[in-house]
Length: 172
Image 1 (cartoon, helix red, strand yellow):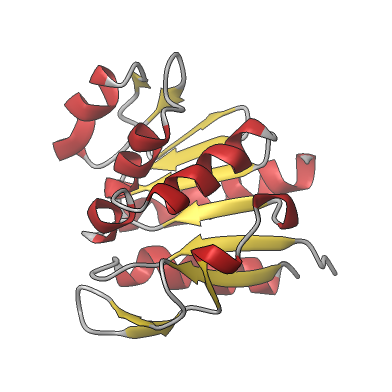
Image 2: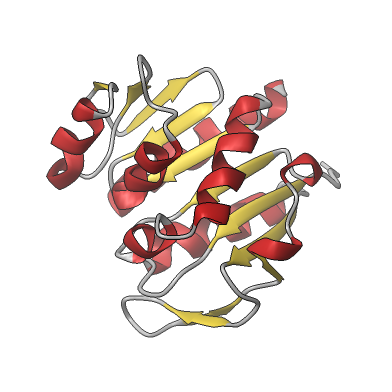
């Protein structure tokens, strides 16, 4: 399959390694043009000190150039949600019916973007109450798809998360 459509994967300090790299390589294998986007164009380190260099800063990134965004978990979402531009980017992708995929603690970014009201979603169990308080219908499942919103709980759910992401992208 060949696909020149762009997908953004957000990066920040202390991201969960598997939740960034597994989607990165699976999406590249599917032919997507995958770009790592951070608050700045610099190197970010995972919880296990694995580096990732952002291809673009959020200032260089326009939602209209992307068909979707993938948000890894770890502690990175707590940093991402402090960036109004990153939150705005996620909201704009959501509003144009692009793919918005979030795993683990990435639900915090969805909460800050204000896009969970009346949506089915899942997350890491420790932020379940946060999702519910943001108006989401929390489901304890390995992957939950609500229109173009794909959420998952943890790295162990990646084998279900990526096929759901690819299915949504194929339907765009």
